[in-house]
Image (cartoon, rainbow, N blue to C red; front, side, top):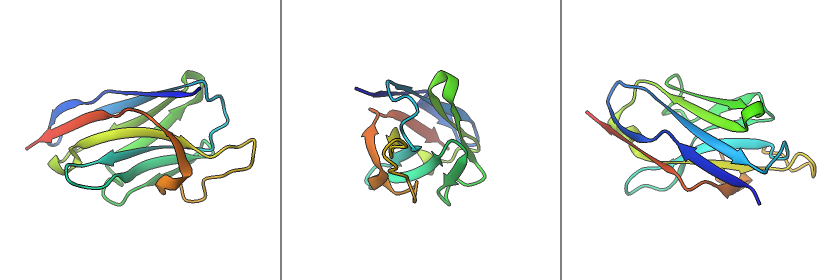
Length: 129
């Protein structure tokens, strides 16, 4: 049974930076995509960034140029470098994996949540002005 554990959340000042990490255990190289999603207070969950096929990256318009997603296969870790934080980045951030390379189930639209079938518990990021 796979497990996703996020870390790195906390309280930050606007303009600051933080890196979120997600350790993925017992998935091997099966997942085709890994992503970060967030749920802001009173809002629905939304995609933040994703990696598909180990190299192709995708970003929500609201974070493009500020956030960077990366993956370390040796450490089974997905990271999200968040720069120039804004109060509107305040949210619970979730790591997720989806697709299956072995079965050919690919994430054709990696920012779409329906591709993802395993989710972490989330880490809270709070940004104050």
